[in-house]
Length: 416
Image (cartoon, rainbow, N blue to C red):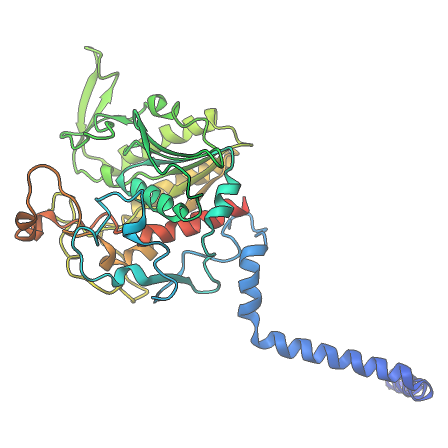
């Protein structure tokens, strides 16, 4: 009771002082008003504040390297004003395997969908900023045709930012496709290594080989071609899905080599990634090279020549159900990649894992289906009459989903 009386006296004394000095009272009231306005504004604008942090704030969390928010969790929004980011027919680097419009697709709505993360905006791609970032450097994608799909997307994205006089051509040397910008002294390449380790499928042009034979403990033949890269973007998944595979112990040339047919899909994938991670740990310059691994690009399993089904044919809308999970998005294989990357980080080597699986799985409408080039003497009529065999529900039309993968990759590169 005595304490309350004393507090009351202090409050009365303070009020008398404020009356005695009216300018002091005004300052106090103004300060309180400013605080009230600030709190009121912030109450309704948390999302705006968070959005600003996406590009500017460095995430201090040890286990979360996403730029400010989770760029991989969101939804597809139709946007025919801002998208596509480039025109298929205007891209000098376009590959006919991914040129769905040129190959006869009439419904082009697939080009107009924008990926919208739940708590922020995906940074707008700026080719000039990226080229400045990799000036005098080398960015190399390493993996299979889905990684080549992403590489072609990257070249199409940067083309409009190149000087008009720039030579827009790609050179193939062995397994390495490369574009070099003389203006920026920057190279953006793709290295064909579908298993990451050595195999009989390593020819960059002729690789549709059966049975598949893998030197599961050998990667040096590939690795020496991209050891000098400043940014490496890996992927490997699809080519490991064969139920049966031959493992080679020894070299292809050796008469003493041991060949063994195995199933064990998960185990052989785990051994190959262990070979890959061991090589990185020993050879990569940790102060120079930035490492990325793309999670698997999902597709529906089936019996087409691509080992998919034909369910993407004639699809024109994304799947909008957040709970959808593509049938071939093998969680066990994803966990092997994640575990391998975690172990590498424990050994002091950071690999950014870009988990594009779910956001890609929503886009059954964005695959080429029969609207792509086909090998050999196949005619368009033969392909159209046998959709069940030839529909490509694995790769992606360009412009399309791989552009979003590259927007996310761009966000990570720019903050590194």
